[in-house]
Amino acid sequence: MATAVLAASTAPMAAARPRPADPLQQKVEAIRDTGAVGVHAEVMSPDARDSAYAGTAAMNTKRPMPRDGRFRIGSATKTFTATVVLQLVGEGRMSLEDTVEQWLPGLVRANGNEGGQITVRQLLQHTSGIPDVGPEIPALNSANGYRAERFRTYSPEELVGLAMRHRPTFSPPGDGWSYSNTNYILAAMIIHKVTGRVWAREVKDRIIRPLKLRDTSTPGVFPSILGPHAQAYTAFGTGTDTDVTKLNSSMAVGSGSIISTARDLNRFYAALLGGRLLAPAQLDEMATTMRAPELGVRYGLGLAEIPLPCGGSFFGHRGELLGYVAWGGATRDGTRSAVVYVTRDGGQDTQQAMIALVGQELCRTRS
Image (spheres, rainbow, N blue to C red):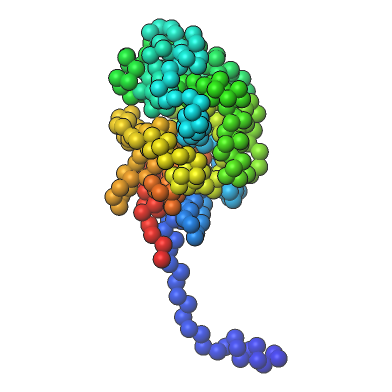
């Protein structure tokens, strides 16, 4: 027996072929090299699921990025909210041409903001002119504000009231384009008014449960991320990073508060673009886009249209909420989707590398 083993071990062997480089892993490492702490990307098609990780789960540690880690998806939440609104439209329970005043009488009526002139479509499309409440939230704008108010609870009415301190970004409604989280806070309130149930419940029952998005949640006022996750960091425009992982995200109801994973987001985008959540008429409304100069893309109803490097375009959304930054989306038919997120609010190089990864992976075909 020993002789046989020795003979086998000394027998000449064919030279091992070098493993081909993994394009997805290379792209993820390139994103890390732009200054991200941790990176995770995942690509899905009907017959494959590819994941890649780079960096660490926390600064100054060797702890690897968690497999299927959860993160705050930020403004990618808007696509979930728009989907629920469009489902209600498809059910005949409301119309995109309904005004804010019809559903929320007296709420949007100050400093030139007039809810009777603003339609639900304009909320979802960011053509309402309603000012963004974001600058009024201390926790989102400075390290001191974050430390002082990260556990503060806001009501939707309070958030709209803060936005109403300011004049419209443009007037009349429909005469411009300006990104405003207040639009989607109002959309969440309208969902509540139409259904009699809060936004979070409708998102769970209409999207999360039917698609079996087991790692996706609407945390409400709960400030921690349960389950595996990496820490998030932001510098608030300074040179010093702050750990911003804990956050009461009630200031982002309807606009940015969902927690999910790359895998669950891929499943959501594939189902949405594949026609499993909306009837064709409502999906066409969502994917009918216009120029959104602030974003450098085209924007529909809670869904952005981004050019592909191989021609055509994909549909998805950028997401950011204090240190977690994501890009994701799917091809128009939903057959291929890609999501990438980082755990530090990187600069322009990071953003370009992230959107390049999504575009290149959606262009890549499988043999």
